[in-house]
Length: 335
Image (cartoon, rainbow, N blue to C red):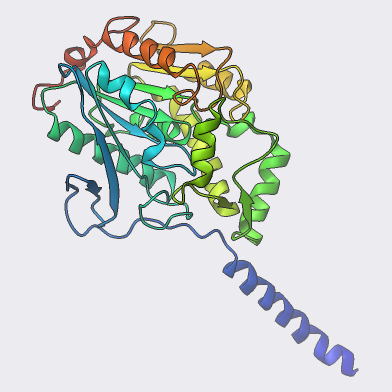
């Protein structure tokens, strides 16, 4: 009788404790705050509407200016990701800018996922600020891995960035059916039970580049994330899902770069992307495949060829930067 008297309350207490624990272990995302002002360009940083300061690096064109490239880094990385290829762009007359995305580098809340909607909105605002800084030059958006996924999402939105063309290097689109149900379910469960669980960002089973010096420099760099929270990894999967879905309504001139030795984004993910992009058949969008290339193509030993191919496409190859007037942007960057 005594056991039956206390069994139900005990079960209810245990259930309440479990629910409280589960609520406390939900994914912790560092979402943007409310707007406190208009986005602005502070020279060495882009400041977003909620006051988030995104540090900025600039490599000015060494020759007669031909255009401007705004670059978005990959997951765990930051703006210094473009330091190695920057001289190849600037020598050809292209100014290169790169900023730290939320949750990475010296931007707010490093290591915590900000949501792909926030990253895409930041990319759009950063593009507007860049066009305002360089109103008379074509603007190209370059994304590497996660950065490319962010640009797919931003470019397919109802208010896309004011860009003339896109270059998407090793786009992180390993979501949806490309990832598989078992691994996806396991990751989601971990993100909701032990969101703070960390994974090392290096693995003996994956090689991001054949540039050992670049990989060693990344390993020493304190602003490159050493460990990834499982909830941030789950957020990345959601972003990859969104990027793959966005590809169907991504109409802009785009060059997609992919390496045959990329073991971070599998071929089936790129095949899924190809099946969705609407401009491949017309030539408005193009995929370049490098059999010897790794994930970090712009830091690989073949980076000079990758950059040269990208600039040839931009300046008159498959599309040409006649795309600037064709898209209807004036010298002031207004649609």
